[in-house]
Amino acid sequence: ENQIEQYWFVMIRTGPKNDFDSATRSNLFKGHMDNIKRLYDEGKLKVAGPFDKNDLQWRGIFILDCATKEEAEKL
Image (cartoon, rainbow, N blue to C red; front, side, top):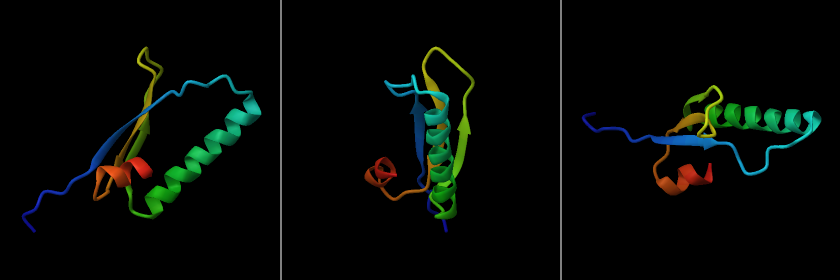
């Protein structure tokens, strides 16, 4: 009851390949959104959200409820 819970803050960045055609990009985005829903349904994803365009190539964040860093990296 008096324990601090641990969460993992994950920065999502633009990958090295991002010159996809619109059909491929749409399919990849659908898979990304399906994964977000799956992680939420499993109780692992607490917060997710996008960033506006920026020079650092940061795309968004996840806050994951995992026991270890390795589990968060796997997800």
